[in-house]
Image (cartoon, rainbow, N blue to C red; front, side):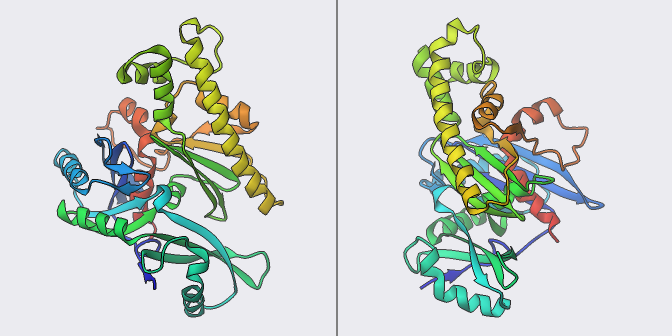
Length: 354
């Protein structure tokens, strides 16, 4: 009634390619290791046609294969070993408390309790688990349980094989993102994608709370397009270059500013509810900082505006902070696209978990 896949949390490699398949684009990062230091070797981004990916689910395998093949043809990678992430609503992750026991005993216990925890039909998903710490007492353990539909994982495996890559692991987005931080404890991570955002609160190196919010960068663009009657290219430029939020001298953008503020207020309310839920479950732990990342975060003054709405310190996280960057890279361009590469960087950093 269930299938176990050990690629979610266990298998590791060295030099790796991380591939993040998002709704709007594919992001690729290759990291090599030199004297224990992660070094950026390659990165690339390619937009995807509409209706290729929907909420983490592969809708058009043929189109995704073609796009990935085109991306690889322009990138001189030196390894075939690849890690891919699953995310969106097709990814399930949950912390579960069990009595302290051996790994063998835990395997049996999880086998019998799977249907209690995983919201997928029996025999329709792969799953994995890992002990991530102690429970509320010395006689308990915390276990991270992850799962994804077999159909989606099978599609990923077949696509990677067809383009000549060797899939060594399937990871989950929150764990990949955790690797880009020096310290993510007592923090909330907001990963803003094209059509949705993922809010994660980490505790003891594990995602204690994961919530998907159906607001992303494309929603901000759509507001500008509608209120200003401009096309998507102009709207993207306004979004990235004009500091609309928190400004009063924006007569030309006044209606767009008002509508964007309403949208971001709704976004902040959903984030605040996630924080409140975590605090109710963990009264002794206070969230003291918000990190923001993701390609959808490119809206002028968004970070500062969210900080005011949430009444917390909020910063745009630099996913390159752990990496050595060769002089051959254009640092200005790399810094501009870095938020989009966050998950792919975290996936490729898995090579250092040896």
